Image 1 (cartoon, rainbow, N blue to C red):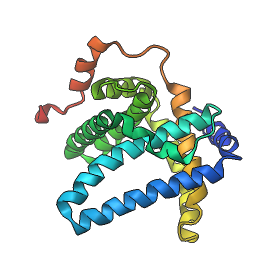
Image 2 (cartoon, rainbow, N blue to C red):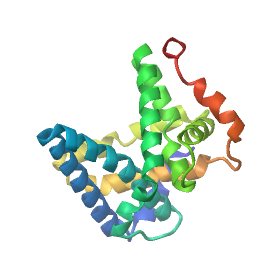
Image 3 (tube, rainbow, N blue to C red):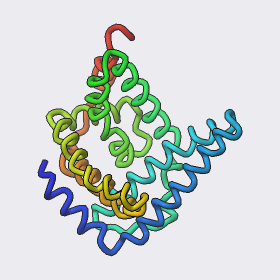
Image 4 (spheres, rainbow, N blue to C red):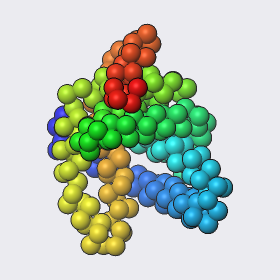
Length: 215
């Protein structure tokens, strides 16, 4: 995994499409912020809205950037594409959250490691509509084997960009967010398996991820 190459590719891929990607970022950000505000204002209703929009928008975002790195040009309406597979997105988000939390109970480091292990699960779903959450997680584990530290270091390499966002009161994020998302999409394109994990191996793969004390 060549960090410089991945980021250079991302810069070229978002060039000429930055306008629509900024619009996508603003639309998703505004709706997510409204959901968070509603959650504080009306706890029950707000929480329900957040549960609905967060996984769906995560899936939409990944689909948009996979489209970008594959040479396509997204439209603002693609912000809502993830809602056509909401239940799958919700289940992936829920299981990843539960497994990461359980590992974090042992210590922070295992939780971080497992978080990276599961980081490609939503990408798998984006490419395979309706695939079960356990299959997505199992395939993410398989493709991230040997790449977790590489992705961690890649994320650390964006620290300078994050600092720039702070110095510009968040304005630079309008460029940094598309760059980061496109870079992660390129990571997926680089390490995705040629052959998917067989279904019969999925249950065993996922069961191994639950800490023994929590099973």
